[in-house]
Length: 159
Image 1 (cartoon, rainbow, N blue to C red):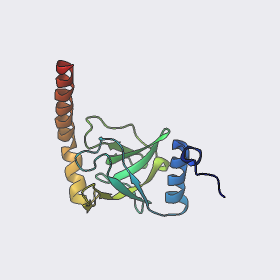
Image 2: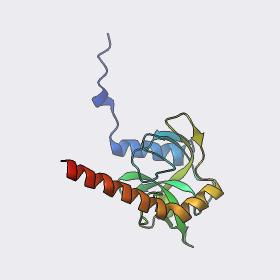
Image 3: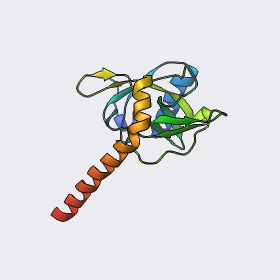
Image 4: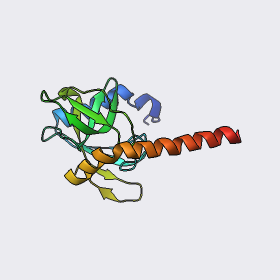
């Protein structure tokens, strides 16, 4: 009889998960579907949505949503600028500030589809959606910052 399965003993660490995703994208050229955590890409991508990341088929361009290996974690943000040398500047759609510049080798792939909890699936890197998001994301960021501030004040007042 086989020993019982121990989930903790067989779970991948964050670093192992990152290495596996990078290997599938870069070495095997296979798309990867993973659930997203975090709210930096609101309103286009929500925490809990499943994203499909495919290997890059072209040079990143403004408006494209990419997965970046940043320090020791994965970041999914929209490209807002690309330098002549290929370095990429990204920002979350709900963020006010841009991220630091990323060298080309840190860009693991492009987010091509988002599966929402409701069952709706849509693309996020179409040229029109990307251009609109790049132009309007600072306003989304201000709006979400205002909502978060109101929630924080309400919690403080009711505590």
